[in-house]
Image 1 (tube, rainbow, N blue to C red):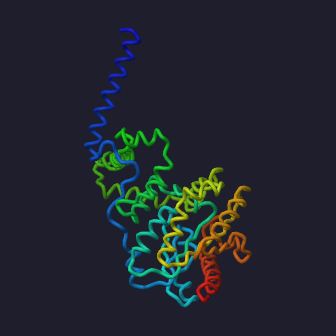
Image 2: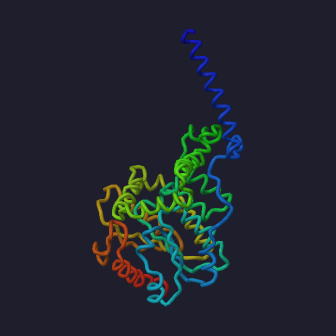
Image 3: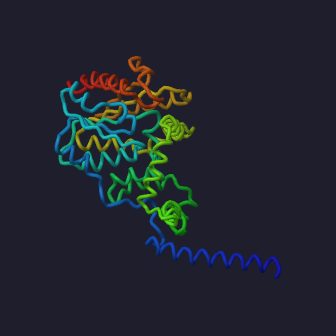
Length: 338
């Protein structure tokens, strides 16, 4: 057989394999064809925070990631301000989760708070795709309704190349890649130990015991900081380019439509900063200053906040948490007494 015929046979066999595998994968994962662009969200919302907001009627609701969790003491802040505060940290999250939380939880409740506070750092407010892929997708899924066209468009579809859009719609192996990977992970995790008589519970206990002992918290914090380098991608410093393709204007609009004052809190970070960040920060501050019902509290260069408050470049230690909460309370008082 000459090389030309061999190549034709190879291409026909590859095409046949693609067609058969596509049909099997579509049946296995119940995929429509062509698939819809954008993510498929669960229909179930995580209602805990909504119930708490409806029951306690907080004057202030705070949203953020682990920086909020480690940096603000809800009880202390409530006591120092003399008003009810509800703190809703979503560790590992970004603006996509914050927007969905505002839309479906804060403003999905029967009671709407007077103030919504969002803790952020650097360029995170205009990087909508930050912390949305892989395991972070489930943070969005907790607060998303089945159809979230704005988030689908801005966070996912706008970030895709033409080839990715084609593959997502017409190549089931690519469409179902997350489900396929999970099935393979589960097979490796559970089926091989099962051959030795270790069932699912046995495997989970063994893995939990092993990694529970071996994980180094400092290494985890360093890994988190390394993952945040996406916020320093050169294109992210172009505020004028990023603002119109971000969720920030939509977060502001949500607060305005629902009668809340939106307070953005820029937290302090200890570590080197790109020179380009200064111009970005200036433009962001100017943009926020022009928005009705929006207040910016900037702690990036606040001398009251010391490096001794921190366990790493982002997160407060218990002493720092107490001190930063007191600083916030002092500055919030000037806002809520206006």
